[in-house]
Image 1 (cartoon, rainbow, N blue to C red):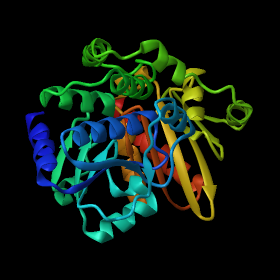
Image 2 (cartoon, rainbow, N blue to C red):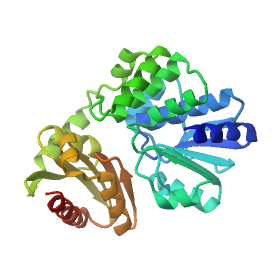
Image 3 (cartoon, one colour):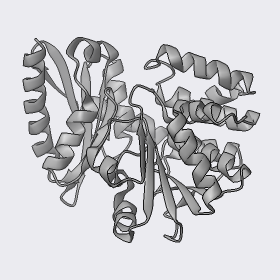
Length: 327
C-alpha cells in the first residue's frame, strides 16, 4: 500500500496532466473511485480530472447527479498520464482504449480485479489487489495510507461504491466492514447511499428481467445448475437475478453484427465449493474470441467477435473441465 501512496504523491508533484480513467459503462464503484481520487489529488495541487470510456451506467448518472459531480466521457488525449481505476485492461475501455494504447501515453493501473500480465508489463506503475472486494475500498485504504481526510460527500460516494460492488455486502470481506466504519466516521451518509442504489422502478428493466427468465436455458453439469439466457440490455442484472432464484451460475448474453457480450454471475456457495473464478474464465474467452474479458470470481464479463451460441458452447466445455476436476 505504501508503494501506491508514494506513486500518487510523486504523480501530484510531477506537474503532469493526469486523467483518472475508468471502464466503459462505468458502474457506481468505478465512478466513485475516479471522482474521489481525482478530487483528492486536485486538492494536493495536481492537474487532474476524472473520466470514463464510452459511457456511464444509468445508475452511475443518478449517483453523480445527486452529488453534482461529473466525469468526462472519452477525454481528449492531451494528458501525460492515465491512471486506470476499476479497469484491468485496455479492452475494458473499448475503442477509446485502442486509441489510448496507440497514443503511447503513459498509464498506471490501480485495480482490484484479476491481474493481467500484459498490463503489468506495459504499465508505468501497477498495483492490483484482487483480495479487496471493491475499488472504492482500495481507494479509501490508499488515501488513509497517504494520511488524507475525506469530506462527508466523498466518504458517501465511496460508500455507494462499496455497497454497489459487494452486492449490498453479500460478497464483502471482514476488511470491508473496517473500511465502512472508517467511511462512516468520515461523515458518510449510509441512508443516502442506500437510497441512491435502489433499483429504479423502470418498466423496461422489469420487462427485461421477465424476458431473461422466460428465455432461460437450464443445464446440469456435475450436479450444478447452469443457466443461460439472452437479452439486449441489463445482462448483468439478469444474470444476478437468475442466481438469486436458484441458478448456481448464470450467463446472459447478447449478439449484434457479429459481436457478442456476456455477463456471468455465480452464487457464493458455488464459488466456495468449486474454486471456479469467472474472471479467469472470461479472460480466457476474450482471448479465444478476439475480444476482452475479466472480472471477479463471482461477477465477470466478456465481449468479442462471434456468436453467443459459440460462446455458450465454450463456456459449457470450460465448466465441464473445471467442475469434474473440482469433483
